Length: 115
Length: 118
Image 1 (tube, rainbow over the protein chains, first blue to last red):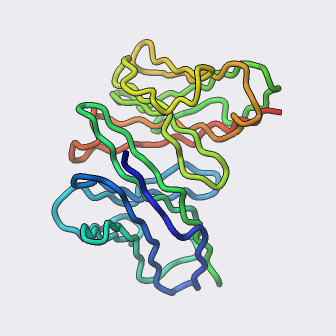
Image 2: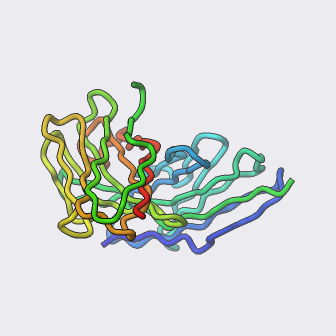
Image 3: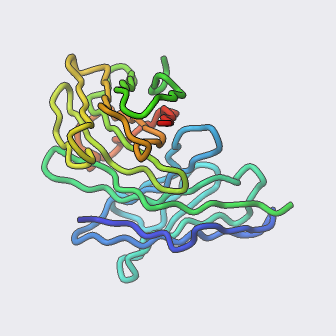
């Protein structure tokens, strides 16, 4: 079965600083990878996804992620964080069986922003 | 509505009672998913429908949990004889196409239903 590991439970960065959130996956074939963000009291919003092609994926809100097969990683990055980026971030992998499919989520990384 | 709608948003129930949670997906969306999310955890897959057919129910924790989508639109997740360990947020999601491997297909999540069993 596919799985996703987010090793950092909680990260605090200063506003304006760069950010990298780690994600490692376990999957036998080429994975379909996602990053979602969950702001307090809101639903899950898709930031970006990787299916194939260019391993550097651009997303919304200035986020990007890089797929590295050799490291089984899909880390999320942002060059300069804003206070509004404080939220919970989930990495996820798609699991497929024929026409059936589902997304398997990691346990999340909570991001706090220091003024 | 424009997004996935879930009701009730908040539900407090006594242990042993049955609970029904409703999901109204985005109009025309083929696939519908149910997830459960405990505090401090990521969403945990429960079950998944294509149209009215339940494709995968491997994530339902036990036989107290069931889900249906009889007309391929609205879905209901039912928890019978609730227990305190059932307390969590229950999220519904929908996607326009079958199969997440299809380029351009995306899952859209609702805001969830918070269930507290006392």
